[in-house]
Image (cartoon, rainbow, N blue to C red; front, side, top):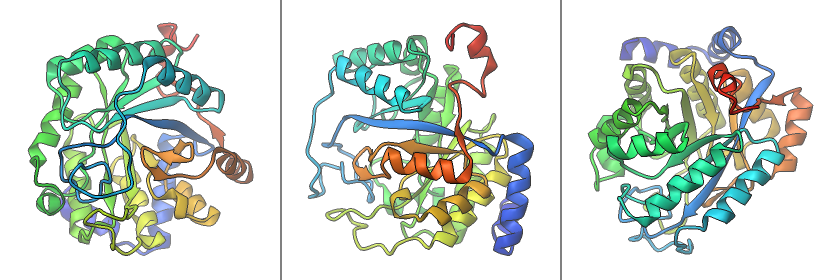
Length: 324
């Protein structure tokens, strides 16, 4: 699609947009299933980047406590508990600018290997990485690499100056070359324009193949960051963004991500109707609040939704015995 075509979709009357998105969603996905993922910060704080939204940046004075890389045994135990609670994917996040070839990276490779052997999809978000590093992660059993675009190329340097937009694209290309699936989306509520939201979706649509997973985050304004006084995102903007993403990227998993803690049951239901089919479990997303697991289970019960099984979308994994 062109930017103009995406804009025409985004600007549809909301009920018409939701209706169209729901039709597309049902064509490509089971609307009664939602993938449940669990996100763990395996190394917290002290990041040299200046992402205006992030409390883990070393230069900002936030209440985040810096923690060195977690021990492998603790991370694997977290994954086991997440699996018991219904999660089919675990995402490991480290507050690094880029992956370095050192003992910490070797530890991450071991974490990935052992969690993958549990039969779970393993995703990692570790910052920029080379093609060789991506191949090592793939060899350890990593299924997906997360590297969000965050926003449009035009607005990017208003939010981040310590790296370029093309650095993001190159990391995604390196992950793809290594055979990894791609998880990439963005954040709304950072002061971007409607055109910036459309521009981000346009860039994602140019990636071939399209990202298998697209997180849509709403800004969680954290005290001490440059965006601490940003106004809340209207729920209608989020639903509109979810629906547009579903139409533009019909085969992708659309993840209702950060900011969900502030949504009502009704608002989340609208997001699922509009095409969201993945959420994060647990009371924390890296460092920001998230609904408790029992709240999500109650929500699923009310809506008649069931958790998606590991690798349900990827039958070749089952054939290999990973999900045996």
